Amino acid sequence: MNTSAKRLCEKPDVRPDDPRFSSGPCKKHPGWNLSNLSVSNLGRSHRASIPKSRLQEAITQSSKLLGLPDDWQLAIVPASDTGAFELALWSMLGKRGVDVFVWESFSSDWADDIQNQLKIDDLNIYQADYGDLPDLSQAETDRDIVFVYNGTTSGVRVPDLDWISPHQKGIVFCDATSAAFAMEMDFNKLDVVTWSWQKVLGSEGGFGMLALSPKAIARLESYQPSRPLPKIFRITKSGKVTQGVFKGATLNTPSMLALEDLHSALNWAESIGGLPALVQRCNDNFKAVDTWVSQTEWIDWLPNKTETLSTTSMCLKVVSKEFATLSEEEQQAAIGLMCQWLQEEEVAFDIAAYRSAPTGFRLWGGATVESSDLEKLMPWLDWAYARWMNEELNSGEVS
Image 1 (cartoon, rainbow, N blue to C red):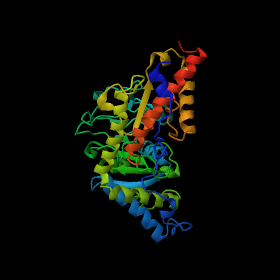
Image 2 (cartoon, one colour; image 1 turned 60 degrees about the horizontal axis):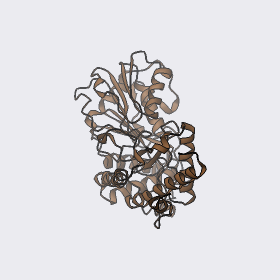
Image 3 (tube, one colour; image 1 turned 120 degrees about the vertical axis):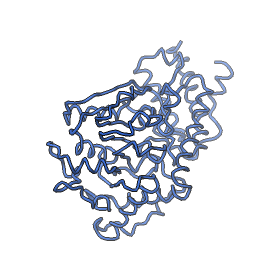
Image 4 (cartoon, rainbow, N blue to C red; image 1 turned 90 degrees about the vertical axis):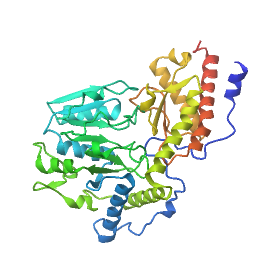
């Protein structure tokens, strides 16, 4: 092994202050401490006036922080972003034909739901491989559109919403779970936007947010699908949207502790400068990784176009010729081994690619992560790869 390779095998001197780079649940915000959360509403009914007011405050504060238009409505719903998005799909799809755009795991799940569970006959599925976007220009004005703003498992995001007509007649459904509070979004082009507490704001999982435009509200009140809806999907009664869901009356029993954790995250976000500061922190995190990628021969971005690179779910692939000679199973084992070493050193937790995504790494760059921690992690990735190369060469499995 040459001198530079030996040097890379030496453990870096500096470690990240926090090794949590998971893509969900995500790292808590700087300064977070469990003892700082209010516990006065624990053990109380969420329908009592004070606990319910805390739910309403979370809705109001989230809407203001994200910059939702004044005529939009926002609700807290069960089952994280998945529950929020499925509530919308199950409640509204079927009136028009549907265009679904697929380029990673979760958008594929939505297409599967629409095709095989909701059984929408008038359905177009536009699909691309991991690393690319499908042809978004195929979207039709008269049809509903379903897409994810940021591909959490591929690291590919839409660069803009110019492909959506300003005169769109159909409803535009946007799963924004890893984009909300991280990327600027033009809500004038959207009708349904969902996200979860545990992503960019780093709060607890289990709850989703459902934001609806006036056009989406009108669809809910004018269209009744023939399919049965479970109780946790029902937000209309007698042809009208139940206004209570936008005022803190939840569809199921929420965790009041998780709610207080969300308040902590929202307060932190406001204290650092609101949405512009959150977006900037994500951009800074991306820059920390992108600088290293541009200088490192063995690694590259999974996305193929610069303008589609995510600033939150940053997905990487190993591109060295030694790695390319391995079978898929061997590549997965190699990544698993490197992640194991990094976890044992307590410098990075949970950074392997999503289970159905191409083999590689996935680093979370949401606003709660410090860019300095990502900068400190980069030499450790080099160390893990150099150690793997050294062991593989010594074993004779890589030539």
